[in-house]
Image (cartoon, rainbow, N blue to C red; front, side):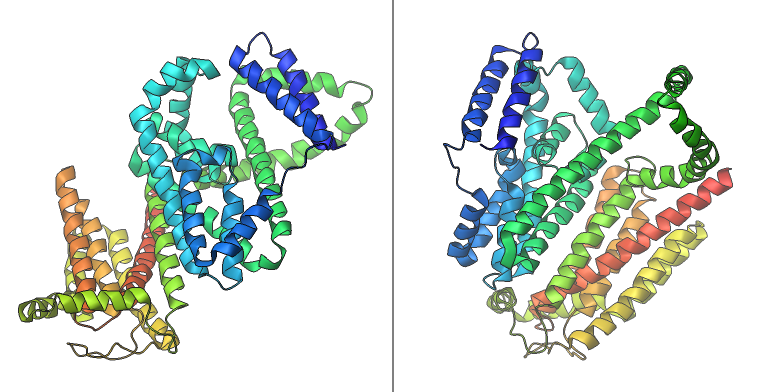
Amino acid sequence: MKIIPLLAAIALAAWLVWRRRKLGRVELGIGIVVVAALGVYSTGVIHLPSLEHLIEDLGQALGPWTYLLVGVMAFLETGAFVGLVAPGETTILVGGVVAGQGEINIFALIALVWFCAVAGDLTSYMLGRRLGREFLERHGSKVKITHERLEQVERFFDRHGGKAVLIGRFVGLIRAVAPFIAGSSRMPLRRFLPYDIIGAGLWGTTFCVLGYIFWQSFGTIADYAGRGALALGTVIVVVVGGIWAYRWLRVAENREKAHAWLHKQAERPLLRPVAAVVRPVVRRVVVPVSRRLKGPARFTLERFTPGDLGLEVTTLFAIAAVGSFGFVALAFNVGPGDAPLVTDRRAFELADDLRADWLVDVARAVTWLGSIWVVIPVSAVVAAILARRRRWGAVAVLAAGLALTVIAVNVTKAIVDRPRPEGALVATNSSSYPSGHAANSIAWVAIAVLLSRFVPRLAGRAFVLVIGIVISVAVGLSRIYLHAHWLSDVLGGWGLAATIYALCGVIGLVVAYIGKNQVAR
């Protein structure tokens, strides 16, 4: 006899009896079927195969095809609501196990899971935007979704949608439906995407690395992962309950009711000794500490909340997360003794197919836009413009980003010491990874972002940003076309510089925000 399924069947049956008058026929029918299934399973007559073992065996048999299995499952987890019925984390763990066995590359696996998870979320989000509101209003009554509840969900995602998307990625039920609800509640894509990128990256990396490290004890780590998800869900429930209680207690009438109730309970004979100990602790410790932490806690929470600079900070963190992962992943695969990556050779083959004398001349001209001797004067001019407008924070971000990029590129070149490609069509020196020109070209994107703040119209701001991105991309492609760098060198340079500029931007925004608030006071 299996106790847990039996207890679950009893609890579900009791709940169905209690709610029988408020549930529809469909819900009652499904509930009865589930109770019967749990009851039969608890007797031990039926033995279900271990899904984790099945997936593990399948992953080992597939070998490199595990990429396809894990990628598809990561996409379908939210893209087709498979996460409601299939264990997404288990499949990701299997991928990590296979990587630990040496069959596939762990960095390529993480990148694939990250990309597919975001793609699945975007698919679900777009379905929600296209079908969500009308679809839910038309069919929602079958599952007790009313017009009023939809409005409540929309208001919730308008205020807390980013946090729901980020934290919900680690909770199975929420992960499967959060992107759809975000789309159906008309949460803006520019707000949804940064939180989703960070959440998907943390989720995919966590389970890939767990499987990779503990590949010899997959069953144990799968069990721990399940417990961890349950624990996280419990923490989220407690936090949400605490937030609700805090908001409820902000009303003076509610505080008076709570105080009267607690006072009444404290006068009970059994609780009187406890109250005698708790009251001084609350009055002398809890209340003073909570007052001191109230301000910093509110500030930290708002930094990841849409509004003020929360969305900007989250967007920059998303850029830094993607950039740093790409830089580190490539750095571990392009050492001095490593052969060029397959994508590196393919990029050179394509460049050779497009070879023409006039294109070589154009590439030589474009590549100078990534030279430090061009980027520094342009950055100085832009810094002078910003200084005249008293945008000292922007000046500091631009200067710090450029200086740290130059230092980081040279330090990384010395550490990795990757040989240059043969047959370069321009003069080259030092090692190959990462591309200094590609890293320097990110300064054009940073300049475009800072200057776009002075453009009044949205179309104008978008035009300025596109120019900066086009220059950066053109510089990187020119390095490949001229055989001065491998494709991985260019991607690594972009990733490194994007990370540095994004983190400098985060610091600049927070410092400026704090200074502005202090002046306002």
